[in-house]
Length: 295
Image (cartoon, rainbow, N blue to C red; front, side, top):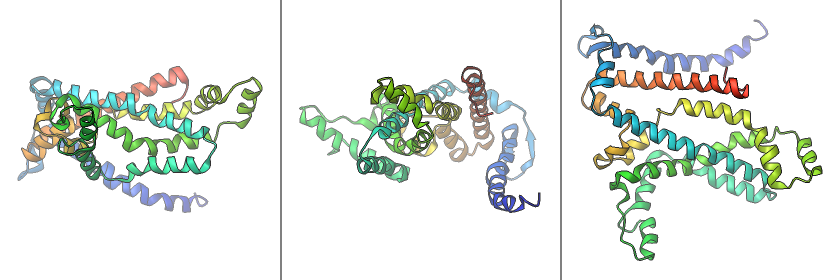
């Protein structure tokens, strides 16, 4: 204990941060089981059990739409967004020019440091029917401008593709770090067997980072229904509700705009429980099939 007291002191601020800002607010979950009254307070409000969960799951006509939208945006982001940094890291690892490699890394990292507000502003400008870059390109082929942000069928494509652009560079950091741990002797052995750069990438580099891929995949699947509120909120409008309205934006409208805190908390708890179940299930499958898991 004496030997590790300085390490514990270093860990103390992190522990306090999580206790105060991450675990402390979880006390608010109790509001989901009460008919919360602002003036009466949390403890004086009446218990209602699972009333708001039943209303949301079985009586809310928007439940299936919200579930579909949240699930599809999460799945599309996972299917298209998850492999992108892996592919970029593998190709960057094969580049011989360090200068070009650093330029590509820097350029691809930059969008990660731009706030969602600015990212959405850029998307709106690019897609504007009045002089937006994309519509100017379409105009070169003699086509009429497209009102992208008023077409609900295009929202998911816009959201997912902009998310890939925003996060692909940052996501490569972990995979590039993992690639440095691949045994160089494996590459030499592959060369002796006549493998070229492509085959070394497929048969040496990629298998070398599979454990990291599985760990990150488990974490990503856990967040399948946890699509961030901010970017969707900034991008969508009532014309896009059919495909863009998700749990977090609906929770915002119900909880903060309509003042129904218990109902909004119940939706949030439902979302969190589903995410937890997905993590446990994916972790179990990964442990059984690849012997790699979070725990």
